[in-house]
Length: 79
Image (tube, rainbow, N blue to C red; front, top):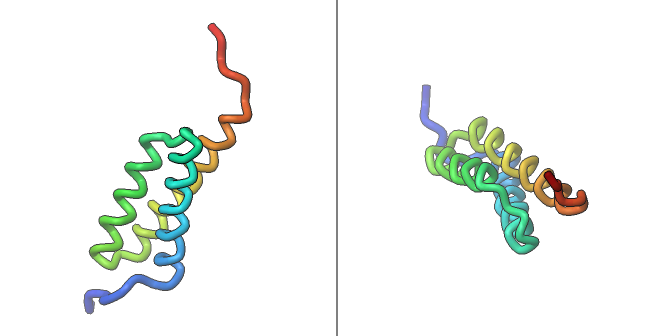
């Protein structure tokens, strides 16, 4: 099979959205390291033009950032 020479539009949009989500979580001081790892994986897959992997990792980074930001609204846990 021929090697892809570009990401699909959907994967490219997901990568940009993931980068925006990570930036937003970082600004709110709610960034989880797992989200950063997923973004790095998405970027690495994008360099290889692997649209499926890029899309999967980007979606995971977006979901993790969403959860991290949502967690800010919850009261802190006291033991």
